[in-house]
Image (tube, rainbow, N blue to C red):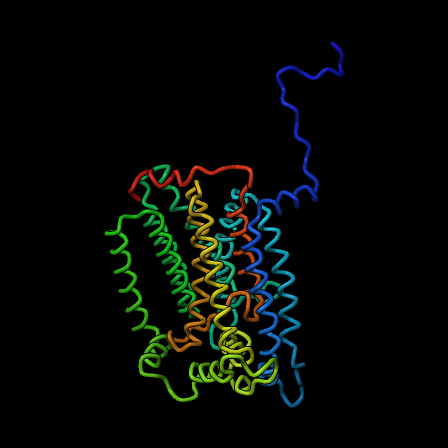
Length: 398
């Protein structure tokens, strides 16, 4: 036999894909509508930070140092470039690699969260940051990793219904909640708890057990409010109507000042008296500068993003992918609607940014990583048909 003859019984080795081929496969499989919604929100964010930047720049300027009116826009564009590149990179990974990366991130950022009370530093009265060459807020990066890690744990019920997956998930959340309240960060604690609740409900836990979990959560919330004075004061102020010209009141006045169509870009005046105009209350700046109609459009885009993801995983065969996608969209959508409700005076002040629209460093990159995971988990080969959620008929215990 000639030495050039192929050896019998061996399959041909597939040649490695080039970078262009990988991009072509990614573009064929990625949800382009979802990607378009993300780009639209980022575009709205650029315009919103541009008109909000002068207010914050003026507020932080001193007699010796005057910040450029567009200072925060320039910084925001840098973070957007980094975040968008990270999102594309993560979205090109397989589900297995997304899971592995998220688990490593969950372990790493939980460790950093443990170090915050020891080596962290304080900003605006809360010790949430740690310096790793640059300021990093571990809780922001932990959010998407937490959602995926919990999805992985809760998906174990298919392998062995006897594993106490809910107990493990609640114990992990309890650790995170304790570390967050040491900072303190009540808003993020509520958001983590909301993600946990959504995942437990979607994982198929019997309603009686879910109701018990809900009751325990309400009891823990009441206990925290008794011990956490700032959170208690915010909630009491919310139910009592607050005081004239406090932050939430100023935000509502700013939101209404532009009417239906707004004053026009850079023409708003009330935003100049609004604290955190470029972050927590940027939705109100949008209302003043671009009008209530634009605010309605922003809400519709967020709703479209949530609905698109949920409809995309409705026939998913992998329980982990369903839970991870649901947890991530609960994280992004929950943060968006809490921020909007605060600006509308329908929710107590939480100090939470508007995803993809507010200025941010750690928060912007972390959100892009979460969206990259969602794009990876919802990728579909258009030439393959799906049989539906096979996991739905397997076991009821968790």
